[in-house]
Amino acid sequence: MTIGDLMERGVSVLMEAGVLDPRVKWETAVTARLGIGRLDWRWRVDEPLPEGIGEAVWSTDLARLAGGEPLAYVLGEVVFRGLRLRCDRRALIPRPETEQLVGEVIADPALAAIPDPLLADAGTGSGCIACALAWEWPRARVVALDRSPGARVLAAENRDRLGLTSRVAVVGGDWLSALADRSLDGVIANPPYVTTAEWERLDREVRAFEPREALDGGPDGLEAIQRVATDARRCLKPGRPLWLEIGEAHADAVAEKLQMLGFQAIRIRNDWSGRPRFATARVPT
Image (cartoon, rainbow, N blue to C red; front, side, top):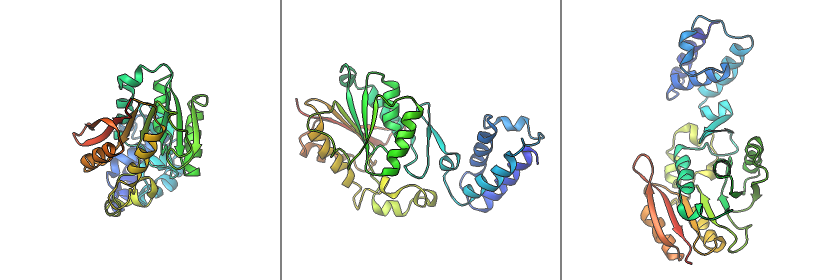
Protein backbone atom coordinates (compact mmCIF):
# COMPACT_ATOMS: atom_id res chain seq x y z
CA MET A 1 0.00 0.00 0.00
CA THR A 2 1.30 3.47 -0.87
CA ILE A 3 0.90 6.63 1.16
CA GLY A 4 -1.62 7.88 -1.41
CA ASP A 5 -3.64 4.65 -1.19
CA LEU A 6 -3.83 4.90 2.58
CA MET A 7 -4.91 8.51 2.45
CA GLU A 8 -7.74 8.03 0.00
CA ARG A 9 -9.07 4.83 1.55
CA GLY A 10 -9.04 6.32 5.03
CA VAL A 11 -10.85 9.49 3.99
CA SER A 12 -13.52 7.35 2.30
CA VAL A 13 -14.08 5.29 5.46
CA LEU A 14 -14.36 8.41 7.66
CA MET A 15 -16.78 10.06 5.26
CA GLU A 16 -19.00 6.99 5.32
CA ALA A 17 -18.87 7.05 9.14
CA GLY A 18 -20.08 10.65 9.16
CA VAL A 19 -16.94 12.04 10.82
CA LEU A 20 -16.56 15.82 10.66
CA ASP A 21 -13.58 17.11 8.64
CA PRO A 22 -12.53 13.58 7.58
CA ARG A 23 -9.68 14.62 5.28
CA VAL A 24 -8.05 16.98 7.77
CA LYS A 25 -8.27 14.43 10.58
CA TRP A 26 -6.98 11.51 8.52
CA GLU A 27 -4.14 13.48 6.94
CA THR A 28 -3.13 14.73 10.38
CA ALA A 29 -3.22 11.23 11.89
CA VAL A 30 -1.24 9.55 9.11
CA THR A 31 1.40 12.26 8.73
CA ALA A 32 1.89 12.37 12.50
CA ARG A 33 2.69 8.64 12.42
CA LEU A 34 5.02 9.20 9.46
CA GLY A 35 6.72 12.14 11.15
CA ILE A 36 6.11 14.57 8.27
CA GLY A 37 4.12 17.77 7.78
CA ARG A 38 0.40 17.38 7.08
CA LEU A 39 0.65 18.48 3.44
CA ASP A 40 4.02 16.88 2.68
CA TRP A 41 2.43 13.53 1.81
CA ARG A 42 1.15 15.00 -1.47
CA TRP A 43 4.68 14.87 -2.87
CA ARG A 44 5.07 11.27 -1.72
CA VAL A 45 1.81 9.67 -2.85
CA ASP A 46 3.52 6.81 -4.69
CA GLU A 47 5.92 5.90 -1.88
CA PRO A 48 5.23 2.58 -0.13
CA LEU A 49 4.35 2.89 3.53
CA PRO A 50 7.19 2.18 5.97
CA GLU A 51 7.05 -1.33 7.38
CA GLY A 52 4.54 -1.61 10.21
CA ILE A 53 3.00 1.84 9.73
CA GLY A 54 0.25 0.90 7.32
CA GLU A 55 -1.37 -1.85 9.37
CA ALA A 56 -1.03 -0.02 12.68
CA VAL A 57 -2.57 3.19 11.35
CA TRP A 58 -5.24 1.42 9.31
CA SER A 59 -6.44 -0.98 11.99
CA THR A 60 -6.11 1.24 15.05
CA ASP A 61 -6.18 4.96 14.29
CA LEU A 62 -8.82 4.69 11.58
CA ALA A 63 -11.13 2.56 13.69
CA ARG A 64 -10.90 5.02 16.58
CA LEU A 65 -11.55 8.04 14.38
CA ALA A 66 -14.44 6.30 12.64
CA GLY A 67 -15.90 5.58 16.07
CA GLY A 68 -15.99 9.31 16.81
CA GLU A 69 -12.97 9.56 19.09
CA PRO A 70 -11.32 13.00 19.03
CA LEU A 71 -8.13 13.27 16.99
CA ALA A 72 -6.13 14.54 19.98
CA TYR A 73 -6.94 11.38 21.94
CA VAL A 74 -6.11 9.14 18.98
CA LEU A 75 -2.70 10.79 18.58
CA GLY A 76 -2.19 10.92 22.34
CA GLU A 77 -0.82 14.44 22.37
CA VAL A 78 -1.64 18.07 21.69
CA VAL A 79 0.41 21.23 21.18
CA PHE A 80 -0.46 23.98 23.67
CA ARG A 81 1.37 27.30 23.38
CA GLY A 82 4.20 25.47 21.67
CA LEU A 83 4.44 22.73 24.31
CA ARG A 84 3.81 19.12 23.26
CA LEU A 85 1.58 17.60 25.96
CA ARG A 86 0.17 14.14 26.49
CA CYS A 87 -3.57 14.09 25.97
CA ASP A 88 -6.07 11.33 26.67
CA ARG A 89 -9.49 10.66 28.14
CA ARG A 90 -8.33 11.43 31.66
CA ALA A 91 -8.76 15.15 30.97
CA LEU A 92 -10.36 17.72 28.70
CA ILE A 93 -8.61 18.47 25.40
CA PRO A 94 -7.00 21.94 25.72
CA ARG A 95 -8.68 24.60 23.55
CA PRO A 96 -7.24 27.70 21.84
CA GLU A 97 -9.23 29.95 24.17
CA THR A 98 -7.30 28.53 27.11
CA GLU A 99 -4.04 29.31 25.33
CA GLN A 100 -5.22 32.90 25.17
CA LEU A 101 -6.09 32.82 28.88
CA VAL A 102 -2.47 31.94 29.69
CA GLY A 103 -1.27 34.81 27.53
CA GLU A 104 -3.57 37.24 29.31
CA VAL A 105 -2.24 36.12 32.70
CA ILE A 106 1.40 36.43 31.65
CA ALA A 107 0.72 39.95 30.33
CA ASP A 108 -0.81 41.10 33.65
CA PRO A 109 1.52 43.94 34.76
CA ALA A 110 0.68 43.57 38.45
CA LEU A 111 1.61 39.89 38.42
CA ALA A 112 4.74 40.59 36.40
CA ALA A 113 5.93 42.93 39.13
CA ILE A 114 5.93 40.16 41.77
CA PRO A 115 9.47 38.71 42.09
CA ASP A 116 8.57 35.04 42.64
CA PRO A 117 4.80 34.58 42.30
CA LEU A 118 2.99 31.56 43.68
CA LEU A 119 0.05 30.74 41.41
CA ALA A 120 -2.72 28.15 41.50
CA ASP A 121 -4.29 26.41 38.51
CA ALA A 122 -7.66 25.28 39.87
CA GLY A 123 -8.98 22.21 38.05
CA THR A 124 -5.76 21.60 36.17
CA GLY A 125 -6.88 18.65 34.00
CA SER A 126 -3.99 17.86 31.67
CA GLY A 127 -1.85 20.47 33.44
CA CYS A 128 -1.73 22.63 30.31
CA ILE A 129 -2.24 25.95 32.12
CA ALA A 130 0.16 25.17 34.97
CA CYS A 131 2.88 23.86 32.65
CA ALA A 132 2.59 26.75 30.20
CA LEU A 133 2.74 29.34 32.99
CA ALA A 134 5.81 27.74 34.55
CA TRP A 135 7.50 27.24 31.17
CA GLU A 136 6.97 30.79 29.95
CA TRP A 137 7.44 32.44 33.34
CA PRO A 138 10.62 30.97 34.87
CA ARG A 139 10.17 32.86 38.15
CA ALA A 140 6.73 31.44 38.83
CA ARG A 141 5.79 28.48 40.99
CA VAL A 142 2.42 26.86 40.29
CA VAL A 143 0.15 24.60 42.32
CA ALA A 144 -1.91 22.48 39.93
CA LEU A 145 -5.03 21.17 41.66
CA ASP A 146 -7.60 18.61 40.56
CA ARG A 147 -9.94 16.25 42.34
CA SER A 148 -9.65 13.60 39.61
CA PRO A 149 -6.84 11.10 40.33
CA GLY A 150 -6.50 10.34 36.62
CA ALA A 151 -6.17 13.99 35.70
CA ARG A 152 -3.54 14.49 38.39
CA VAL A 153 -1.45 11.62 37.04
CA LEU A 154 -1.71 13.04 33.51
CA ALA A 155 -0.77 16.53 34.72
CA ALA A 156 2.25 15.11 36.56
CA GLU A 157 3.33 13.23 33.43
CA ASN A 158 3.25 16.45 31.41
CA ARG A 159 5.05 18.37 34.13
CA ASP A 160 7.82 15.77 34.32
CA ARG A 161 8.24 15.53 30.55
CA LEU A 162 8.89 19.27 30.46
CA GLY A 163 11.35 19.25 33.36
CA LEU A 164 9.10 21.39 35.58
CA THR A 165 8.97 19.10 38.61
CA SER A 166 10.62 21.63 40.92
CA ARG A 167 8.19 24.43 40.04
CA VAL A 168 4.83 22.74 39.44
CA ALA A 169 3.23 20.88 42.34
CA VAL A 170 0.31 18.60 41.46
CA VAL A 171 -2.11 18.44 44.38
CA GLY A 172 -5.40 16.68 45.02
CA GLY A 173 -8.33 18.78 46.14
CA ASP A 174 -11.73 20.18 45.33
CA TRP A 175 -10.77 23.46 43.65
CA LEU A 176 -8.65 25.43 46.17
CA SER A 177 -9.87 23.75 49.35
CA ALA A 178 -6.42 22.29 50.09
CA LEU A 179 -4.68 25.69 50.16
CA ALA A 180 -4.20 28.13 53.03
CA ASP A 181 -5.80 31.55 53.41
CA ARG A 182 -3.96 34.46 51.76
CA SER A 183 -1.26 32.20 50.38
CA LEU A 184 -1.47 32.90 46.62
CA ASP A 185 -0.36 35.64 44.26
CA GLY A 186 -2.75 34.57 41.52
CA VAL A 187 -5.49 32.06 40.73
CA ILE A 188 -6.19 30.87 37.19
CA ALA A 189 -8.99 28.50 36.27
CA ASN A 190 -10.86 27.10 33.30
CA PRO A 191 -13.78 25.56 35.22
CA PRO A 192 -16.68 23.73 33.56
CA TYR A 193 -19.08 26.40 32.31
CA VAL A 194 -21.31 24.63 29.78
CA THR A 195 -24.88 24.29 31.03
CA THR A 196 -26.25 20.77 31.41
CA ALA A 197 -28.70 21.41 28.58
CA GLU A 198 -25.86 22.62 26.33
CA TRP A 199 -23.74 19.60 27.22
CA GLU A 200 -26.52 17.30 26.06
CA ARG A 201 -26.44 19.01 22.64
CA LEU A 202 -22.65 18.91 22.16
CA ASP A 203 -21.12 16.87 19.32
CA ARG A 204 -20.95 13.16 20.03
CA GLU A 205 -17.14 13.10 20.02
CA VAL A 206 -17.19 15.55 22.93
CA ARG A 207 -20.00 13.95 24.95
CA ALA A 208 -18.84 10.37 24.44
CA PHE A 209 -15.13 10.82 25.07
CA GLU A 210 -14.22 13.96 27.02
CA PRO A 211 -14.88 13.89 30.80
CA ARG A 212 -18.28 15.35 31.57
CA GLU A 213 -17.12 16.76 34.89
CA ALA A 214 -14.70 19.03 33.01
CA LEU A 215 -17.49 20.51 30.88
CA ASP A 216 -20.86 20.38 32.62
CA GLY A 217 -21.23 23.41 34.89
CA GLY A 218 -24.72 22.53 36.10
CA PRO A 219 -28.14 23.93 35.17
CA ASP A 220 -26.86 27.50 34.76
CA GLY A 221 -23.21 26.71 33.99
CA LEU A 222 -22.06 28.73 36.98
CA GLU A 223 -21.69 26.18 39.80
CA ALA A 224 -17.94 25.64 39.42
CA ILE A 225 -17.26 29.31 38.75
CA GLN A 226 -18.96 30.17 42.04
CA ARG A 227 -16.84 27.62 43.89
CA VAL A 228 -13.56 28.75 42.36
CA ALA A 229 -14.28 32.42 42.97
CA THR A 230 -15.28 31.79 46.59
CA ASP A 231 -12.11 29.80 47.24
CA ALA A 232 -9.98 32.37 45.46
CA ARG A 233 -11.38 35.17 47.62
CA ARG A 234 -10.07 33.29 50.63
CA CYS A 235 -6.72 32.14 49.24
CA LEU A 236 -5.50 35.24 47.41
CA LYS A 237 -3.30 37.81 49.07
CA PRO A 238 -4.63 41.40 49.16
CA GLY A 239 -4.57 43.03 45.75
CA ARG A 240 -3.87 39.78 43.88
CA PRO A 241 -5.82 38.67 40.77
CA LEU A 242 -8.22 35.93 39.80
CA TRP A 243 -8.46 34.90 36.14
CA LEU A 244 -11.37 32.80 34.85
CA GLU A 245 -12.36 31.38 31.48
CA ILE A 246 -16.14 31.71 31.22
CA GLY A 247 -19.02 31.00 28.86
CA GLU A 248 -19.81 33.76 26.39
CA ALA A 249 -23.34 34.18 27.82
CA HIS A 250 -22.11 34.46 31.42
CA ALA A 251 -20.31 37.80 31.46
CA ASP A 252 -22.90 39.77 33.43
CA ALA A 253 -23.67 36.93 35.85
CA VAL A 254 -19.99 36.27 36.57
CA ALA A 255 -19.27 39.97 37.10
CA GLU A 256 -22.18 40.14 39.55
CA LYS A 257 -20.97 37.10 41.49
CA LEU A 258 -17.44 38.51 41.73
CA GLN A 259 -18.80 41.82 42.99
CA MET A 260 -20.94 40.07 45.61
CA LEU A 261 -17.84 38.20 46.83
CA GLY A 262 -16.04 41.50 47.35
CA PHE A 263 -13.69 41.48 44.37
CA GLN A 264 -12.65 44.76 42.80
CA ALA A 265 -11.36 45.87 39.38
CA ILE A 266 -13.69 43.39 37.67
CA ARG A 267 -13.19 43.19 33.91
CA ILE A 268 -14.52 41.00 31.13
CA ARG A 269 -12.26 40.41 28.13
CA ASN A 270 -13.04 38.98 24.70
CA ASP A 271 -11.41 36.00 23.05
CA TRP A 272 -9.92 36.12 19.55
CA SER A 273 -13.38 35.59 18.09
CA GLY A 274 -14.75 38.67 19.84
CA ARG A 275 -16.79 36.71 22.40
CA PRO A 276 -16.70 37.57 26.13
CA ARG A 277 -14.53 34.74 27.41
CA PHE A 278 -12.37 35.84 30.33
CA ALA A 279 -13.12 37.46 33.67
CA THR A 280 -10.47 39.02 35.86
CA ALA A 281 -10.82 40.61 39.28
CA ARG A 282 -8.68 41.49 42.30
CA VAL A 283 -8.98 41.04 46.02
CA PRO A 284 -9.13 44.42 47.81
CA THR A 285 -5.84 45.71 49.19
